[in-house]
Length: 104
Image: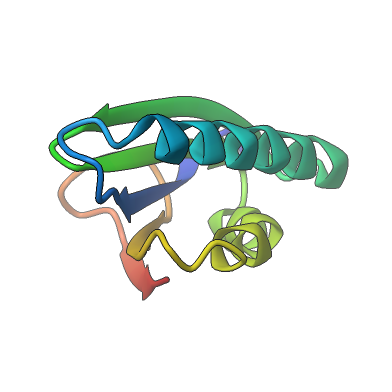
């Protein structure tokens, strides 16, 4: 089936366009934990981030978007100072691709 499903997590930052130094440090630690959890569970891969516009987007891909999100959801919810949402995308990227949004 491949790595055609995805989870995109958008977290709001309070410290300006790219977040504060402290926010970026906390996000980096969160990314490390997310990557380790995905690797341990074998649910896909963590593919990096994009900071800007007062938020950060985290990118994850795997064969089962629900399993991938279940792996990372507890980690995302442990840091309540970063409100946001996750887009759980089923199938290949495209306008007709089914998806659901989960508020964090």
